[in-house]
Length: 155
Image (tube, rainbow, N blue to C red):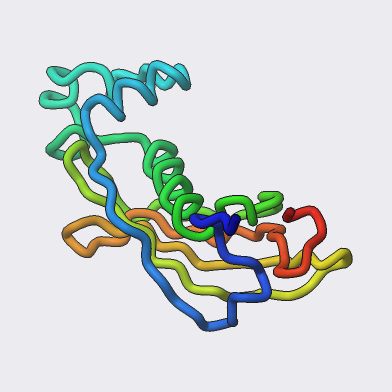
């Protein structure tokens, strides 16, 4: 029986190819769960009154780490299910704030896709995390090892 819902293989990607994920709204529950799980219980994220009086911006700001993790989740769902083998390197740039209630998606451009030994490949992408206001809040360029179409480990 054929399995559906699998990710893309490295040799199915072409340099210059672009795609975008579905959207995901960041909720108050997402923020609370994330900061409590990670220990990021900074007043900037936990104290609404402090934020109103001393915060650098208006709104319930969320950690960039949470936004990045949600973006990676969107990518796993859309391109890497069972094909992402290793996360090797990344350049990361926070360009602006993200708030509770923002809906993000990831715009991905393939910068590199080349073979390694054993049928696997290295894929570098430029990922832009974009809000519903069409603002790029984070840009990062991960390098991943991905399975190939003929990778024997993908059975």
